[in-house]
Length: 173
Ligand SMILES: CC(C)(COP(=O)(O)OP(=O)(O)OC[C@H]1O[C@@H](n2cnc3c(N)ncnc32)[C@H](O)[C@@H]1OP(=O)(O)O)[C@@H](O)C(=O)NCCC(=O)NCCS
Image (cartoon, rainbow, N blue to C red; front, side, top):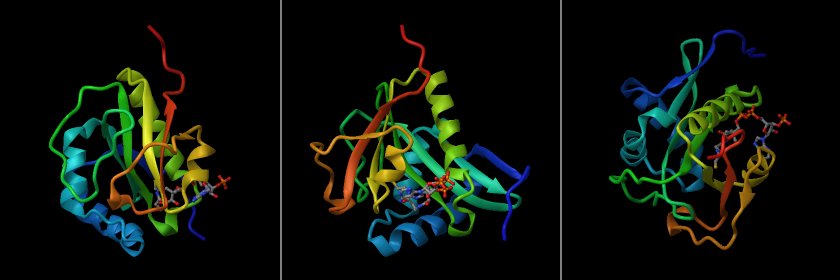
């Protein structure tokens, strides 16, 4: 069995990661009809490089997280590239994926901890996301709450829910 130890590292996503990220994105979301492709995903990461991370296990890219500022209750359209950096206190966790063989070992938790620490430091008030592919219970267990009234772009399909939470441990004022 694969074990994870001190060789697990969360770091900022860099230009050299994109072929591995695009392969993982296509593998995870392609079968669901939700793959946006490298150009669209990279366009969102370029908006906010400081809130996009990779997690490595040794020499392998084991997962990634892409987040960018986005107005509350609005959502990037998977069918379009992103060009606008919004000024908003809402940080949108656009995509989080961990490669199949590295799952269940806390890597998503590590990526989320890094994101919430950055969100606190940069004084974001809320984090939002769109739960797809039956992942809503995963997010509920991590403090996110659904906003079922929020309409989503058709590109997310029918099994998708907008969710958000206040940034944990945020200093007020
Ligand atoms: C969801 C995902 C990122 C979790 O990554 P991970 O590194 O395995 O997560 P962690 O190890 O930090 O946490 C694993 C826990 O989440 C739970 N979990 C994973 N997927 C879940 C789901 N769809 N619903 C409910 N719980 C889920 C596991 O059962 C495990 O629970 P435990 O800690 O009580 O044993 C990964 O399964 C993945 O990439 N899935 C495909 C892409 C996806 O759905 N991304 C989210 C889209 S919004």
